[in-house]
Length: 95
Image 1 (tube, rainbow, N blue to C red):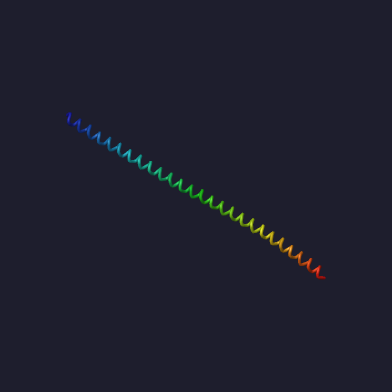
Image 2 (cartoon, rainbow, N blue to C red):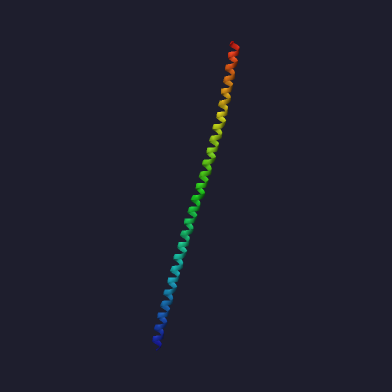
């Protein structure tokens, strides 16, 4: 009778250990999945932030280039006006 009780206890203990191992494995798998999801989210957020920074840099470069071109255009127009005035003065002096 005691042997049957020992066998029953042993089987119960084996099932308990198996259940514990299964639960631990499931918890480890869930933790790994959560870590992978967090890493993917961090990568996506970093890609978005880098894209936004690149877009802002491109916009700033475009603004600087257009400003420089506008200033150069204004200077060229002033030079053209100066040339016209000089030509008019030369024509007046010659006549």
